[in-house]
Length: 218
Image 1 (cartoon, rainbow, N blue to C red):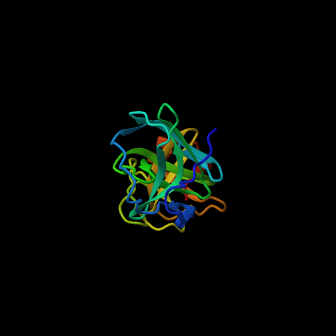
Image 2 (cartoon, helix red, strand yellow):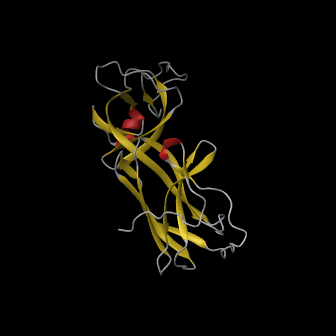
Image 3 (cartoon, helix red, strand yellow):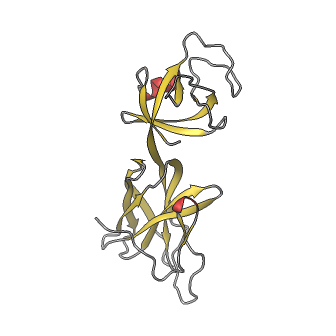
């Protein structure tokens, strides 16, 4: 398994929010811009528990050994670099990132390093970092009722109730290999020890049964 690469020819990386590193801007005047190519992403493992490693692998086309590819997450209005790797003789890369905290962020891979054409990039889905959360569900008998965050509960309403997250906050839930990203739309649950109440539509998307534990990014 290839270890993460430090960009020796670039300016030092500064660690910012979430422990992500920000790629330093600028290159040396002598750096030659690399020929434009394309990045293919052919495998991802980006649903992980906090403390575990996420991986993204693919290839740079045309193949170029030694090119630096960065895995980046969108945070606010900018992108933060999580980890990098150098391509092998066939242009292939495998980037590994140890996720230290829960959350959900859009991902991309991009050429990086001195002289790199940073327009060469590829969407890599989302990084979802989970913890266990006790959950239940609600719906039948309450349809037509008003939701604490506004609107009316229907059989097709996707969302969750939570006692502390802001209304509209998005949370990704995962259960037995199924995932759904939904907003907080209501308050609850009010049973001790439970953190989320799933609407019946959310429950159906996940294949969730009654009450128990789900994986949650918040």
